[in-house]
Image 1 (cartoon, rainbow, N blue to C red):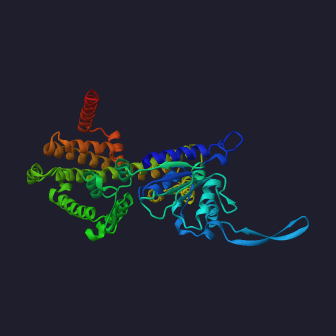
Image 2 (tube, helix red, strand yellow):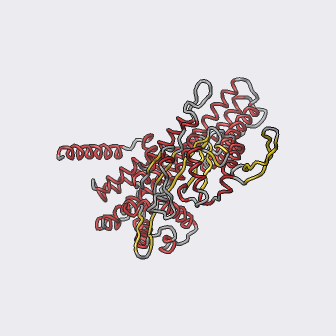
Image 3 (cartoon, rainbow, N blue to C red):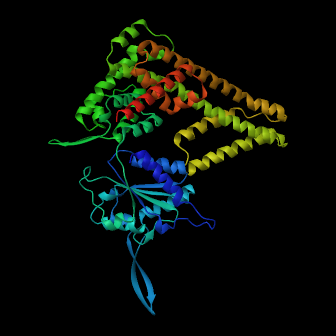
Length: 495
């Protein structure tokens, strides 16, 4: 299965394992809650999906790479205690609490989360002394004599032997006590994730043209050469910051992340061209409806790779408009709900300024609790900080009656709504200008198929188009769907 399917299966498992009956007992007894064992190539996102699952299910997450641990840190240190048996006292060896088990309790204490996931990565790459402990962990859900707290699920991950010479095989007894999920690298699934995470568009554009370079592991006389999804994502983060700082991203930098000489060289050449196309074609001018005459002459004579790169540059430019709309819409929607609650409270006769301040502090407390429980992302927290700053600027003056207080509090919201409307209009104009260019440059060619398809699949674009009618998008999308269905029918008939 691919990583997206694995994520859904684990989410379903969380829902089932944490489901309780009328007496408050887990419907699936803990002893029957098999650990999940993910096996797949490195760098395909096993750790990332665990973070996503914990966030979406609003449960805790404790993650460890087990190769960094010794037997002592995993099991605990021996200590001597005295116990009496039949009137005689004996020294007995026990163990201190495992560092891993202690981390779960620390997480519970810090976040208030009583349920969660213990994720152990590289579980089949442990040392000789730790291997029996890992088998015991999977079979009995314990480290030494300490059990995993009730309500915490176990997910472990490992790499197949072709990717790591240090791996150990699991015996039948262990495999019979886990749920085994075999994961493979899948570019199309990763691309969905990459869009949502806003990876650098130059990388997405490159991989769309060179999909075989998304994930490669090859061995030759010079050793192993590889490219992983993790490598592309980490490179993207660096490229985005380097560009903001006006620092070069050359082949030597790319090789630090892409450990395959041919791919690194090819990607470096493409990124250089991609930057050149952005400047030469004047993407910002196209989206502003100011296309230079020589632009069409060049695009007509361009090779397919160049034409597709221009399409991706247009999509990248449009994304900035759509993201601005989405950001302002979320601020506006939250502000609207706040004012509705404020208006409701005013009707109950509360002091206007005190009522506003109480609602404000209540919302801040909720967000702070979500941050403390680690179920609020950094982006969400940053957005709330912007919202809180706006609300603080619009606290009504004391001594005003309910009507005047609400009018004063609403003034800032009206300005925000106007900001949203301006952002929406700018996005509408940019989209129309993009279609103007696409129709004149490519008519109904494959480039238009890519353009409309990406608009449909990119989250911010799809959300914008669901709320703002674009006749040409709807027309082309319908035509593409009809054409796709026709090809499917003909394919079936030819079988």
